[in-house]
Amino acid sequence: MRLLRDSLKILSLIAAIFLGSGVLALAEQRLALKGYDPVAYFTEKRAMLGDAQHQYNWDGSTYRFASTKHLELFKADPDRYLPQYITGWCTMAGFIYSEGHKVLP
Image (cartoon, rainbow, N blue to C red):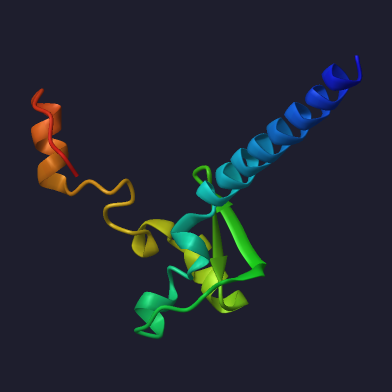
């Protein structure tokens, strides 16, 4: 009986570790551009990490910005600052896929 109880405790601990890591991975996937400020590429001409204090949820993803000014610029015209190939597919690959052919990204 004690062996069964100890085995269940160990299995519960292992399950909690795996489930917890999956939740963290899902949360990280929703953070767009791995936390980098999309506006900084245009205004500062370099990559800048965004701050959690300046973030905005748009189209199912959370974007972070280095400043309030960058956040406001993004809110005014998100399409201007979004990555061109946000899904990892270029336009040619998307066209080929739409014609019914498989392509590797």
